[in-house]
Amino acid sequence: MTSFEYEDYGFPIRSDLMEAHKHCWSRLSEAGSWLDGDHKINVAAEVRNARECTFCNEQKDAISPNAVTGSHSDIGKLNKIEVEVIHRIVSDPARLSKDWYKNIISMGLKEEEYIEIIGVIAMVMIIDTFTFALGLDNRTLPLPNPGKPSYYKPSGSIAKAAWVPIVEPEDAMPSDGNLYPNPKVGYILRALSAVPTSKFHFWDLMYAHYLPEPIIYQFDRDYRAISRSQMEIVASRVSALHQCLY
Image (cartoon, one colour):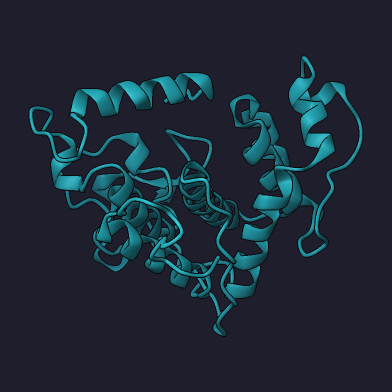
């Protein structure tokens, strides 16, 4: 599936959603801050592959993911550390631990690479979940574009309030871009801030699926086809089913 118009679906799809999906796929194919376009596409492909991994299913069914031994079934494009990160985040994110994260970093994966991988995972999961809900096949991943990562690291990035480094609002610099346009900054909005481009790209997609940033805190305003209360009830139920601590 390569079209962004969702012509195979019997009902109209909002134009801003289609535009957000187009932008997401375009950005996925380009070099980021720490991963080039080819690397990002390989991460995206591994996200999809992880859903069919037998070892992941065995880990998820076990009392502890460490109670079973084996190896992930991967497509052979990424190193084993990256495969472990992708498969665990895709299949069993509720049982990740700080010790697991620190071990991943100790094996050589840069914290910023980890964050950018998470950004790719999140965007691919949003797009794939959307098409799945419509009863459509996954869209074809884009071809990577040439280019090198910028390797930009915010000067205010520090691991303090979370496992990963984040940039607190008071530490944001103009060179980071407009990290926090709204004075209300929940921690979910800080999660990818150590890799600003990942944060911007993820939220451009997320706002289209949820609410534009200026509207988020206007709880008395209904902006979508269902009411704000209905939206939050659905979100709460989904979060509970996925054991989302947020």
